[in-house]
Image 1 (cartoon, rainbow, N blue to C red):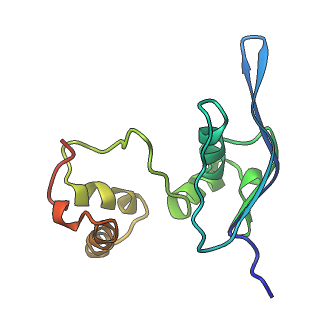
Image 2 (cartoon, rainbow, N blue to C red; image 1 turned 45 degrees about the vertical axis):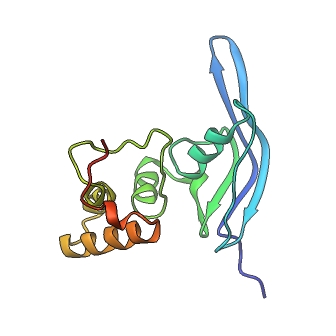
Length: 145
């Protein structure tokens, strides 16, 4: 028996009102991603890539359709549930990095764990492990600049 997909959207749509003009950023997007799979979202500028990722990450809400992640219906969550979802389940790496210049790479990576109340020793261990996974362990004590 196959496991359910880790991410599933059904008839996902997002419309913005710009002045008096309705702009459909997404229209009828259905997708399914199995656990352990890597997915690339590509397309022309303005095609809805960032909108889709913002919806999946709980940073925005759809105009219609559903989003399910790990069995939870993200599209039905209220503000508090979305905050918990972003804190514990969704991770985003933004194009502009949003790194804190006064902190080291290790400190930047461990910062989200502070907000999840993870013990300091465990935060450092996890952050070091993640830097190792992406080939940046040698830069752990360097600052973004």
